[in-house]
Image 1 (cartoon, rainbow, N blue to C red):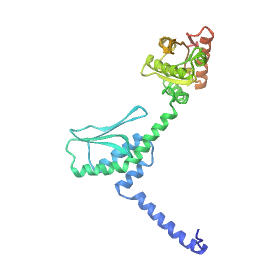
Image 2: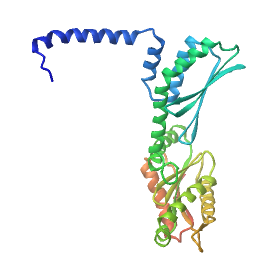
Image 3: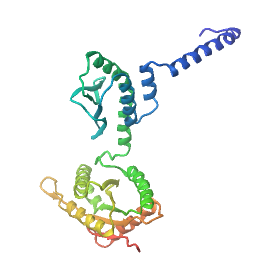
Length: 308
């Protein structure tokens, strides 16, 4: 490494910093639409916010009546739409390095010219890297909140949801009820048939639970062979009916183990949210009800009684 005399360093540094400062001011205040677009997109990893920025910047250069974006991220549809469409449209698949990051469609009442189409393509090429990063961020967040075996939300997702629900329940005086479910004698399944069969049974159970509840309800893998179901706008009696429906769905499951047919049952504990309690207290009450269901014969539902 070449040594630079200290005197030379001290005289060149301010000049370099001045040039850097001037370049930064030019970059941050440039009227260039590409620099402005990429600078704005780099401030957020929210895909919805990025698409709003893209629509705003694009509309300043090439007028349109509607912008629609659709992509499937982590097996879920992500849709963004703004404006009201017209009969003429142009559609672009956002491909980068062989991977598709969604489809962008523009509509308007009059036809797009060739020059406008070329301009749209240039703007999309400047935006696609930030859009890719936002899509990947959503996928990473989803993976962190999803159980890898059953593909349903995990305990971390449940904890975050219960925090939000606790605030909503207190603010709007709404009823929420939690069901904790535990497969009966699941250890025996693993011991006799192996973990491959046990894992298959857990996946089937998750599917059965999702099929037995409403679209507004949500299922989580709480841990091991234990699941949780969160029911909005639901009291204890309705929740008990859901729990019994869940038990029936699980009891109907059959797994072929090569000459023998495996079936299981599940026990459920129900607890309605009490105003002012922490999520951990709520879970503890549902767990206590589940313990009573286990202790009183399994394959049954018990409710943590609350005074209204």
